[in-house]
Length: 164
Image 1 (cartoon, helix red, strand yellow):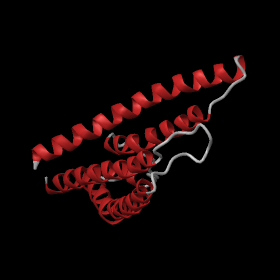
Image 2: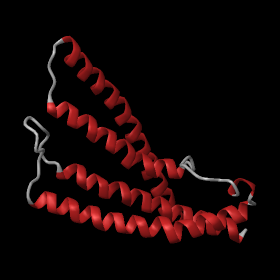
Image 3: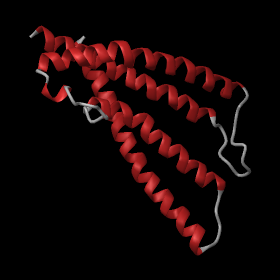
């Protein structure tokens, strides 16, 4: 079990690294787009769409890493004053009853959405847009799987904290 959790944690950290790399790529791409637009008076749909896709991938892959680092948005009016055991119980219940079910719903829904897109070989409706739009849609599935895997780590850590 411990080896599996170490593997999952490594995978989540790698997803965070990918997300950070996409941030750098997005900055470079936006600079290229701005230079082309204002200096050369030209713009390409595929560049604009690639900006959207990179922006989405940053959040899809970065969400699990943010959850792993415990830097996600939390309304902690009461939570900040809880003992470690009470925080662990709160995390456990929230993860089991909120995070895991919504991840499962999102995975199923996104998979159906992506599979349908793959089946029709969906591409961009815009002229000069990106082909193979289904790849981005399958990335949504991967993003929610990563969050679900991180949820399993949170459940394990919470139970371990409560047992101590």
